[in-house]
Length: 455
Image 1 (tube, one colour):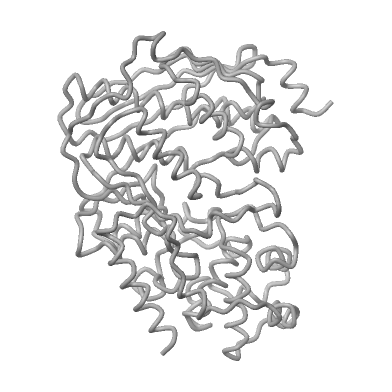
Image 2 (cartoon, helix red, strand yellow; image 1 turned 90 degrees about the vertical axis):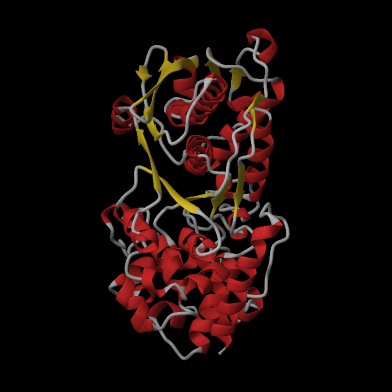
């Protein structure tokens, strides 16, 4: 019997008991109360700055948003033993909303299940027990008449959020947003606006979860971007910001495991973005608008624009292993991907100046290279672009006369691909939720980047 089956037999349920929240000295403090009976209780915490007045109506809306953040937070703790039942003792949900959460659990844990050898259907993974709004006496959606304005732009320290910031800069009122932070995030924000208009939320994981991970309980990827979606909504609510402008691109829609639903970037996908917008409208009626500003673009188009933002080249970090320490690890698929996707737009010396070494000369990255370019079926479990974009960037690399260990070894395979950077820089995905008023800024940046590449 597998660990997954053994734990599900041993632990029947996961319980979301409730939460406490307190607003004091301009800070919202939240403590959640979760439990896997017979195993452990868990008390993760959050802190959010409060930048507006909160009357009774606003507090009612805020309490609902905090409850919803708790729902997405449960996923990290549920996955430890994956009980068959999640019991929600606080808040309320309609049957359709419960189905929404079952879908997020399943798709958001797709990579986790794949890498742990877990094969169950969406219906089999879990059931969710929760009172309905009628049973609880909730009048959803709660009304929120606050006059929101301006942008809240989540910053992760990588190239994508830089493109959003620099595209909107000079046109719109921008507040940066991040969870916990890190040196790369701080450095990017410092370059952007000297941290003059920044919103930082603080999240603390429960040490019991970390201890169970160390003991060998089930562990793996969770949908962090879904967590960020709910957290950024609370941040927008508490800071009075109207537009939450994410930096998720259309390339995020491609699955990681070929011919399957497993996508490392599921909660960055257009599907999740649509689902989240529809879900949040049934929770609170407000003028807050969540969307991805870069959804019309692909990774290679974003890279072309980012390469023109030269003041960020020394400080951005897209490496998940090294970003908190402000370094590129230079030994992971994300580092290799960024090196490849920027190569049509930066010289070899510029790239070596960023990374400290020539990544395409490293034999240790050959497997990652094969997965990125599509020689092997599955992509790396990282936030990377499509196989066709990687192939196009490498064709341009070879076409410019540059050589490396890996491109020379797979030269014929790369040159046989039909993809080209020039063609890909002419794309615009119409399936997006970017308000028409703000699309022109992005189109102008893309045209400028395309002209620079073709010059």
